[in-house]
Length: 263
Image 1 (cartoon, rainbow, N blue to C red):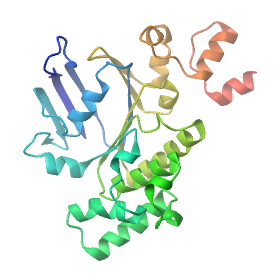
Image 2: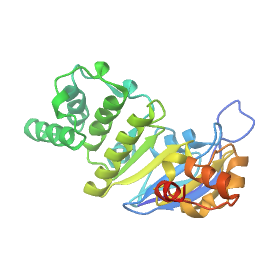
Image 3: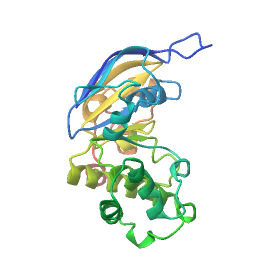
């Protein structure tokens, strides 16, 4: 679905590269979490995947289509992005206007546009807020609308760039639950950028970035077994695992319900 091959990137006036020789692939329908501390290269990687920054070295393909300035319009139709602050994505006076704006830019006809608006608002349980102003919504509601605006364009891949970072725990759980349901219903490929390992427990795979390099990749269970290495990179382990280690002194992945049974 997505192939990243030996990409490197360096900003002007910076001595060290933001990314150095990063390669990985993602299969259709996977949920892949990319984690790393500030300065690990996550943000630069996201901008390259979404054709926001031009490639300097290496190659990225989405369904065999090369990510480039020439193909940026087509890439934006295949890759949807949800950012940390949804306010930066809102342009419409109402929720439905905001979602319709992106569809108009892609030349979707009027009747189809309104069908899609209703469909995606139902999908994120926000149809009752259709005529409300986006800026008056709660944080979790804003992210749901931002997600609806992205999936209305029917991308193959959705990238969450720290999309839950500004939400409280309840809002975070709600938004992630919505995205998981959409992934299942629409066969979406999800790339979730985060610094919070709590959000990666249910991912299919986990990629760990550090100082612009891809250090580790594998299932969450496999990588959590290397907890000391993750914590040395400034990535606190999920609460359930920290509690398990505290109680048993072992380094072993354990699900929340198993921890509760144990306690």
